[in-house]
Image (cartoon, rainbow, N blue to C red; front, side, top):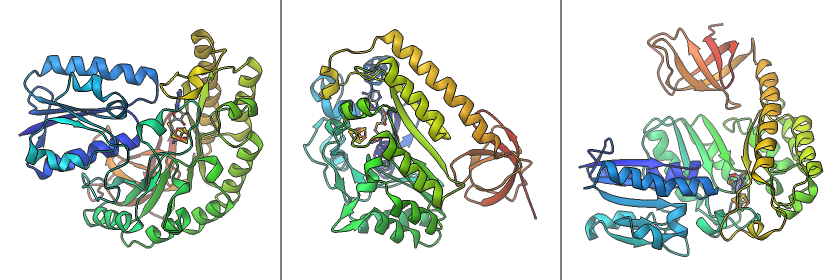
Length: 422
Ligand code: SAH
Ligand code: SF4
């Protein structure tokens, strides 16, 4: 028996797909192309209107290619539009209900599974044996930023028990995993029976054979000096912080209900850099939020220049169902949003280039995770999460090895280096 799976959206969706794949594999299924599959799965993203629309067209396209397979829709769109999807799917699996999938093999692959809370958050799902593995530490979100659909697609925040997290990571290192990326919409608000995020990091940092720990996403309101210090002190915690700013205008941040102003945000970055001077910082930016004037937008540009992020993910604001901002007056025109997005990307690309140029000649610790494009190359990442292609690797090196590389070339989205022996 064979399956095909297509995943849209964030790392959390990627992890959810992996959970379903691990159940399928435990039941004897192998991965295949669309045409040969007995089960076809589409894992959907609802974060922007465009991603949501894509799901419906993608389902149509896939069903044309394979008319006999059982069809499963899952993910964020499945959670909020189960009725629409049940008309075109054999199974609809909400983000809350992945645990139900285990049962489906006994009960026949059919039905709609949606719940109003996450089912069995402490269950330890399988992994696909990669060097780098995602581990959920919290599910859901309580922040209700006014533009965001996530609190509706992933429901209220729940922290997983540290026991289940540690058990999962121990399984990961047993099969050769070296790095974990702790996942949550708001990881720094982790709290399980009084154990906070720093306490959890401390426990994970002690796991033998694990080499690196990363986490996404931090909400600025929960990131403080104590965590900046913890990152510098726990040797496995990598010196990279993803801290979404969204806008440089305090007025827009208030309308977004982000609960910080630019000055407070800048202070958090200062803490991080104070204790992790070589660390990297990335962010998310939304342009064209309702009522964003040219003046507000200028403040975002100012913020980019001021903070100097290594990289940003920038998005045009998109109206989302349930999200309060979609009812706000004075929406920004599509044309204006396009212009602003382009401007943000141009400015950031110059900043990213300048920052990456500083890596030239550095000796960096690189965890190898895959073969690169060329035969004698391997790819890996620095602790600061920069992709490095290692040239002229010898055959004894393998995925999961940590090497030291001298950076010899700076590309647009990666670096090239060579192993240094001294
Ligand atoms: N929990 C994380 C990630 C949320 S979604 C956080 O709080 O940062 C990832 C990113 O998508 C957000 O940071 C935001 O920049 C973007 N995003 C979310 N909703 C959006 C919308 N309606 N329009 C445009 N971008 C959006
Ligand atoms: Fe969405 Fe805000 Fe929650 Fe992030 S913190 S998932 S942006 S509501």
